[in-house]
Image (cartoon, rainbow, N blue to C red; front, side):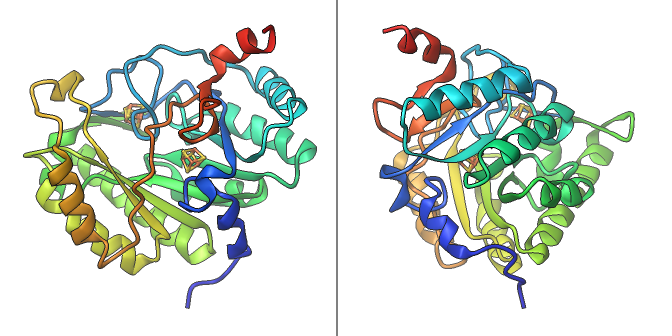
Amino acid sequence: MKKLLFDPKILKRHPCFSAEAHHKFGRIHLPVAPFCNIKCGYCDRKYNCVNESRPGVSSIVVSPEEAINRVREIFDRGQNISVIGVAGPGDPLANNSTFEFFEKVKKEFPEVILCLSTNGLYLHEKLPLLKEYGIKTITITINAVKEETAQKIYSWVSYGGKIYRGKEASEILLSNQWRGFREASKEGFFIKINTVLIPSVNEEEIPAIAELAGSIGATVMNIIPLIPQADFKHLQRPSHKMLNSLREHCSQYISQITHCKHCRADAYGVLGDDRDIELELLNARIGE
Ligand code: SF4
Ligand code: SF4
């Protein structure tokens, strides 16, 4: 049976895990993690991890010190923020700055839910650290179960000081993603699976991802429509019909999120609210 490491009531305050919470509570993403350890075909590497964000817009990267200052500013403004997350612009687990920042937040704002999103490559190795820093909710982006499909999505993986390509890269990434997910679930973390719907590449595999994710114990799944760019710029953006029918089909295996707004790695505020602005705009607003 799954261990309950944390009180499930925290999900009622997490806007990304609960549709009910998403109008009431805000979250802040601090862009403290510039480096990434893989290359997804849909990523154009302009400073935002597509896994949790709206791509193609350049944004700032801040140091852990700048980030904690920004958190203080936002709380001073009385925002109803329940979650502080790191979602990029690269992979949070590939950056020590992520943990330097979480350490500061944990000390100063112990009541806030700490969250991060990752491609999962380092997840099993970093789980002890995530527990130490008090992270409770994790998003893992998983786009495939089959190595042949993963090979069409990822062009390289950097692991253990070496760059892997082709079959080897896909095998390492898939094995680590699913291993990290299983171990995190056993440890009691609340897990959201993000899957980018890439027409003609992984659309037929998404039900299998949902079924496996549900059986392992993910809390929710967020199927994100591809924004055609980078290696996939020639593909069509999925239609609403395709997206809705996949979500409906997958809901038999795992609850589906439908309120996602493609948050950027530096998003801030209540989702869908006009306060859901990027941190780079924050300073300008503070001066208003
Ligand atoms: Fe880009 Fe994120 Fe994929 Fe890294 S994990 S390549 S930052 S989309
Ligand atoms: Fe929500 Fe993902 Fe940000 Fe966590 S990392 S607060 S789940 S958007």
